Image (cartoon, rainbow, N blue to C red; front, side, top):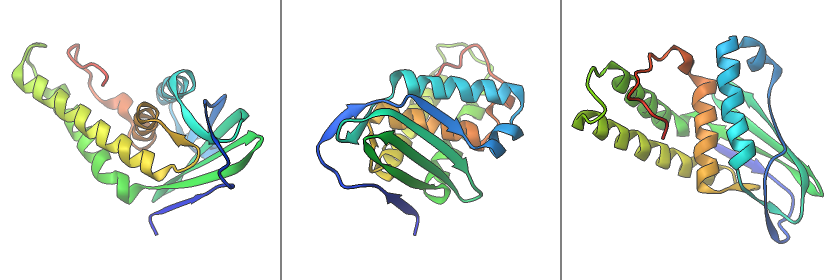
Length: 177
């Protein structure tokens, strides 16, 4: 089975955010200072901008991500809510991860200005992959369910966990999507 989520019964849905996101110790220790900085930036963006639909009123919602060979476990808990664990299967996310990184790499290889039609086409392609990946993440995380923008941010964090994106050679014309 490629997806597994467990959660408590859904009462009424309340919108909320996470107060903390942690990476498991093994992945954290394995990261270079540059990767840890990148992970912190992605996590901070989710904490500041992320929105989730929780079952009932919750406070102090926290998440822990554990990276395994074939999956990422996303465990969330909050006071007043049943704990939730979702398995994000990398075989489902793999095509998006590959397309996203390949597009980013192709963008870094361009030696053209910011108004290049090729660069603009690649930027659109990258945004489309990011949107589709976000929808897939959103469908995998049933409860608490992220909104589309938050699911995109979760995908960004997953990209940085799976690939060492600090090694991408960034050009000035690259901009985040």
